[in-house]
Length: 102
Image: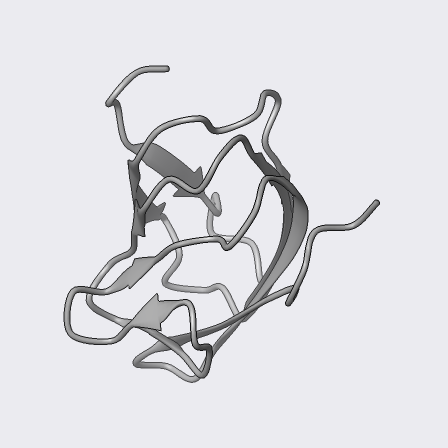
């Protein structure tokens, strides 16, 4: 586990799919990069434990696990999750599966 941020590099593509190569066991800061032409993404991620994840200020969610002031997401349990993001030109609207896939 490192404290290095997770950079989601869209490479200016409109639609992108991300997959984390290893489980995330610690708190991370997520960053969007090269996303000016991007519209949506899907990401598959696995959390070990319930580490707090911090997202950029232009991220919004409608989720009980989301702290809209701190811009943090905390999973309730370990496991694999699917994340979907849609961009409206200003904000990224994220939806994270309500429970881990088994």
